[in-house]
Length: 483
Image 1 (spheres, one colour):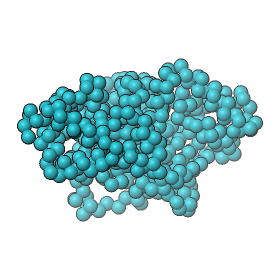
Image 2: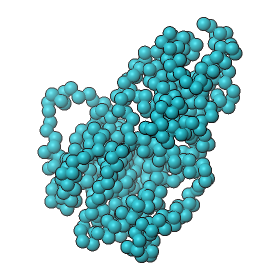
Image 3: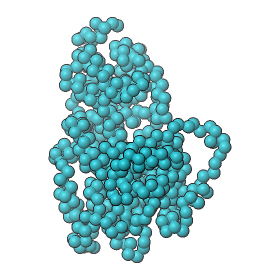
């Protein structure tokens, strides 16, 4: 098999016909790979053969992961996931250019092993492949885009505040059109599913679908930032209907005006109504806590309403750690009157729904105790963590990384932290941020194996981004000390 053979119009037409098949696409590509035919026909893919991926996420070799990504895509396209993932299945049926999506799945990691950004490196390689295979110019450009941006949706949904209107608009500008958005969504789903067992979780699915829906809304209605007021009016009407005269319209208007704009795009009307009832209950109790279970998604929402105080969020995270509750995500909204809503999505340490009602009652009691100052978090965590000499010796160590970004958000400084996970790590970070005079508005927490990847959207005491470089350097240094 030489270069003229690879450039043959007849051969390439046959290859594209395989990709365009209604069935057995993955099976055929797998057989071609097993016989070493695929790697000879596409030498760039041949270099992925049995290449081990040295990270804590991928359990398969690079070639196997790429083929499994194709398998996941084809399962969607063939309707095999119709019951488990009906929304994604319907989107897959709407895709016209299926061969390009399959090629993107096959080649998305083809740039790995070069020592630099594998997405950009892979995009450059598929340019050459597209030319050799004879893809039309538009298809070649689409394939290059999908390979270059195949990590974009996972990164934004899992590590950024997708209630930020500007972020979603910038994301849509980067994607370009609704058809590309669909393809990128399908590719991201397949890529995550193909990484290894249990890497895909319902929580990641929720975040991805929310980002897709927000992006689709931008493309369909060409929304701009000015729609916040219109959205507020619609929510006001729906919330008023749910509450059925429990509160007056002026009260509702004052309530919505007392909260930041991102609250409107993140909270559903029924959730807003629930928050209003909680705040009204603060007249009798200083702390109001509600718990809502999402059984089909394996997580629960814990909402805490109370008067704000320094380090409040760190106290709550400490109570969670002491009770072996894993935080997936947190949204923190401070009202003009000094009250605060902390909304945390949580699971058990293994990513499962917590069913034990006694555990929930113990957690609520613990949260109340630490907020009121009757129990100190350090005392709780000292009981929880008992150092083991053996465990410390065998535990692999990776250098912690702290990155600060002042460009991704108009209103917040974003801090990305990658560190070795341990009991109480989140409390150590959040209490340090509080000590530095920083207020957390959004937290995204992810743990894989023994590694934690946490993101915090913060402001200073005046509600501004941190602009002073010396202060930013100190923040990084102080966080590195505790992680």
